[in-house]
Image 1 (tube, rainbow, N blue to C red):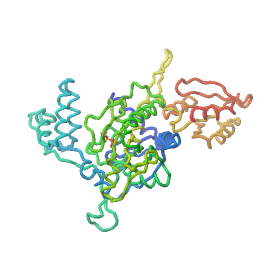
Image 2 (cartoon, rainbow, N blue to C red):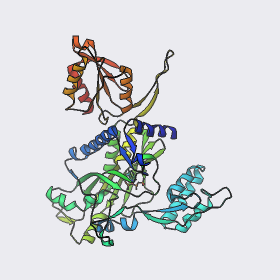
Image 3 (cartoon, protein in one colour):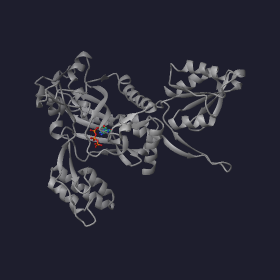
Image 4 (cartoon, protein in one colour):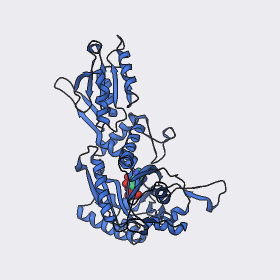
Length: 472
Ligand code: ATP
């Protein structure tokens, strides 16, 4: 499905969803900009998540913490010491690879049993931080070796993924700060602020959406792996001993959230982590079948009391909660749900993209369509006067004025109606309305449904409600 994926990337650019960053300067690797429709779609995904977390849960509140944080936070969280990937450089091609990605890609070319054996070996070596062993594994399998069979690799090294910069004007190590590689820590260090001022009772959650930065070694697959991206994270604080139950509950609830967008359940699956991070006692990914295979879309992690305890130790401030129900002080346990907003955007686009052959014996025809959930579509309603005269534009403008405060509309009077419909199909607009001469006589319009292409006559005055009912 690489062809389909390439077509999706081109479509995103051609229709103003996603542009390579700094394109007129030949781009910046693994950094992207969202265009006029992309920005709308992204915002709608964000709002859908935010509403489902905060508005629909009495015990979850939002937070918007700064990207810059005290550098000791990243020592406490383990990111300074552990947030790194082993990498290796190929001296022949001057290319840098993440060791696990290199071996995974190679394993896919092998018969299944052999591939699995290779990956098992890799996991073992990664767990033991056996870098020499990893290099040997790459060489022994002749991965990316030249025709003559020689392999020219550097040693395997750890590469920390955090970006750093200088706070203030003095260049000195003490002023080195990081761009946050995850939004979670902003939540942990504000635990007491939110708990106290919001009078929150455990179990409760804090949700946050914001930018995160990772200097990914191999950044490929479009917006799947970016160096600057956005995360939607929720940390749910629970009584110690109840984490297993809450972990199961959030696993289920997050899957339901995905399915609520109408995606075929067969395109989703859970994948348990084989190797747990230093802070976790259980972890699972929700994977989606992208055109390049099943890949992680969201992670659900049972993070224990690791983060709060670490911050307690490093900040020397007591971070505890008094549970009045059991008359006990404790450091809460945490269940985290963490999803990449950009990766969710890619999921939505990949799932919506369809090329349809509409040919009849008389005529060849086709269309490209984004079957976006109406809730997420950048434009909800396109309004077309059939012609530019006879008072039709005026009627169409009146409808625009009455709908614009409620949802995003688009007005167009140029080109044949069929062409105008196709342009809206390509950006996923669920409804188009055409105002024609009959409208002047009986006050009805033609409403056209994107997926079925069915058209029906409805009273002009009903249009707003029809659209509202679909997007609420
Ligand atoms: P991966 O194994 O793909 O590097 P991860 O396990 O490190 O991802 P987490 O740290 O669990 O990812 O981050 C939570 C979520 O953030 C991921 O499920 C993904 O949706 C998103 N995410 C992580 N890294 C990136 C990135 N470089 N670009 C876009 N989204 C990302």
